[in-house]
Image (cartoon, rainbow, N blue to C red):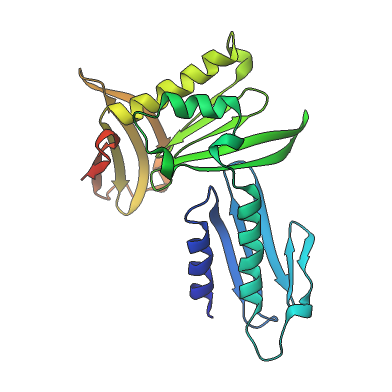
Length: 251
């Protein structure tokens, strides 16, 4: 398999998981060594091969005694290691925390529960190990959230992200209600995604939501400083209208 084929197979493995492939490299000149980083918005796992050995975050997963001379089996065992991790982290609804189940229940009239992707893991923090649950409602449009056992919740859709810190609220229920409201807005009202280019450079992207009166600004992201852009380049604006309540996108 060449580099593109291996990458595509790994990406295929990740389609129905909470993970994305964020880095990938293949060196055909140095023992065909491979490196792949998969990430679920909270924790990264770096897989690598070295003369047939398969490693993940410095832990040996497969020694090279599986290798059969003349066979290209290292990529196969790399994908087996990735698949095992995905299986280990995947959880079902009945394994979720009460917070995650509550959020999904409050959104059940707007989402397709059978298509929700979920996983659970542990990450290190200043307070010590903390369990978290990653939940993806719509992978293509980055509609997802993470629930932390300390009560914090992180939400995301398109490029908009928000962190709800439990310490800022009177109760855990208020944190949940804020996260639910964010997603009910996303699934109930039209959203306009505006991209501004100067020449071929993306300058900024902005999100607006229409709750029936006018387009309200809900997020912006800048990319290039104006002084680094050709002032004579043509400015082009692109608008994309999303209507997640009808499960379709209009351009």
